[in-house]
Length: 228
Image (cartoon, rainbow, N blue to C red; front, side, top):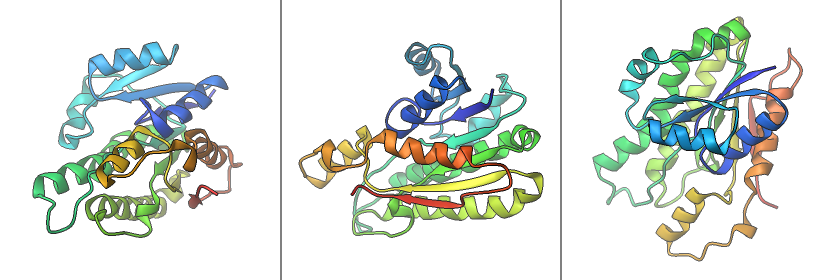
């Protein structure tokens, strides 16, 4: 039975990944921002275990994990949590830039650093659920795209550094996906939200599981999936 740590499992892609892994009998550890959210996730995913720490404050994650007992071996760490605030470069404040980079880039880097011993022990897999914005940036998407471009750079560096330890690293770049985040984006854009136009979270979860289930000795480095 494999052991997986998943961020962003409260909704959208992260929830779909967690559900698929739990249904096949794997052990899932879900990351929660606080104890109340952890209790909600435990009710939503019976049998799942939780770890608590606010990804918006990556400098406190080491302290948070130091007061908990994460698994001794981790077969995969799936980074699915993220935040988005649209706005032009001439409008975005340092507060928004720092909040976006903290959650979308610095927190994944720090959480990976903290859990690398367990990933190395299992010759595990780190999956970064990125975005099409991690490949191309568009007007109003500067802060989010910068964080996702940085996340891709983080994945590429980590892959080279940990290859000798047997740790695989995959970046998944989904197009627009029918999630609560996408609904928020549509409100910010002043557009009508129609989830039928976009990828289903379960479709993205399939791409994540495809990368995880690839036989040892093979590695999907980057994977892009788009609504047809």
